[in-house]
Structure formats: structure tokens, C-alpha cells
Length: 229
Image 1 (cartoon, rainbow, N blue to C red):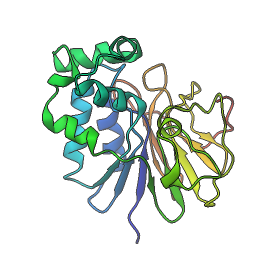
Image 2 (cartoon, rainbow, N blue to C red; image 1 turned 60 degrees about the vertical axis):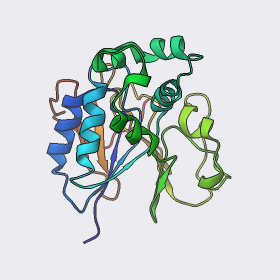
Image 3 (cartoon, rainbow, N blue to C red; image 1 turned 90 degrees about the horizontal axis):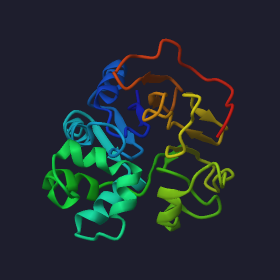
């Protein structure tokens, strides 16, 4: 039996939700966990989330993708102050509180190394995974970083990718709490930092596991007709 390919939506500092969906899916050594990024900001425990991701790397195969919030942390960790105020408005204050420090320069080296080693994208024979979006006509290796990490589906909805593979993306929060399923594209950012859920999905079977901020499972999951972007 081939390994499960499990896609994890934007975590945004909610450790209890991360623990809950990983436990519910019974993540095993042979599984591949593709985390779509935005591990930090907005939620109360960015430090705990990154530590969990590092620990999960010793339990299964983890393929972490760099999100736009993670990218901002890396930029600031070099000593740059150009986007510091913007980052704080995007949820950076909560991240600093979780590390009890004044700048990403002070974050543990192991945590910054985790972010530095995140991928721009990941792909298998049937699917590819990016944080935000893509340009349908371009090979994945040629995609601009701004598109991969910052483009919102609300402003530019891409068509099916030229590879024929199904896209699994995050970044554009689905305020319904449901996965956006367009067939050729599935968005699994289900608004954990708002009133939604954190989603983990088996991309081959479509099975999903969801939990709220406190780690409580969603009783009814499954595919629904998308109602919004």
C-alpha cells in the first residue's frame, strides 16, 4: 500500500488544533505530511507549532512549505526592520509573545532553520502543493515566489495547471470552514485563526479531519458545495 499523502492547512500558532488533527488521523511513520505553511502569527503559540513540526519530522516524513507569514519572519530574522510594523499588524505580536522576545532575530536557531528549510512547493505524481497560488501555464520550478506565497484566490483564481495535476493550496481562508473544492484545485485553509477549523486531508481518498482552536473535533466533515472564495 502506498504511503498516505496528508495535506495540512495553515496552522497560525494553534498547537491544540495541530495536535488534535494529527492524533485523529493517526499519523504514522510511512505517511508524508505536506504542511502548507503559515505556521506562525495570529494564534497564541507559534513557538509550540514550530516545535511540534520539528518533532513530527522524527515521526513521519514532513514536507513543510514556506508561507507568507513564515517568509516575513525569515526576513526579519536577518535584522531587517523594513516590514516590522506590517508584520506586527499581520499577527506578529502574538508570535513575539509566544517567544517572549522583541524580534525574530532572537528566535531559537533550530526554529529559524526549520523555516529556512521549508520548500517553495512539493509535488507527487497526481498532485502538487503550494502555499497560496500558481500561474497555470508555468512549470512549478518557474513560479514567482510572490505568487506561490502571497496571491489570493479571491483576486486571481488560476485555471487548471498545465501539468494536469490537482493543486492543493492554503492561504485564502475559507470562512465557511469547509474545503474549497474546484476539482482541479482544493483550498484547505479553513480559517483556524477566525471562527473556523484546522484541516488535515488525505489527498488520495479525500478524507478530512478538522479541529477548532481548543482541539475539539468537528463532528461532521466531508465534501460540500463551495459557497465562497
